[in-house]
Image (cartoon, rainbow, N blue to C red):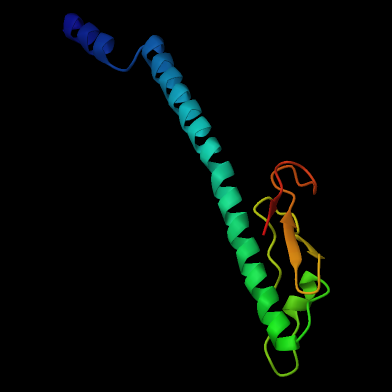
Length: 129
């Protein structure tokens, strides 16, 4: 009977080394997954920002045609033009939660710019139309 009890006790559960080994393996897998996802997140954020710039550009063109003038700021795109509904319900932020910059560069030319990941306008990572 004592022999049988010893066999049950020695066979029950995991050893500390086995548990630590499993935790170490899970940690390595989590690190590999985080690094892999992190590299793709920058690409996703850039593509999302480009899509927002495209949507804002279309709203600027709708405003220009409807109001027969260029907007003075992106906030103009959220205001009704006479009886016509505003082209945008609100001005989106870029993927890094920063506002877009709108600048007229000619009579019918304009620039919509995101500061990119660093958030500052004028860097190498800026995105524009």
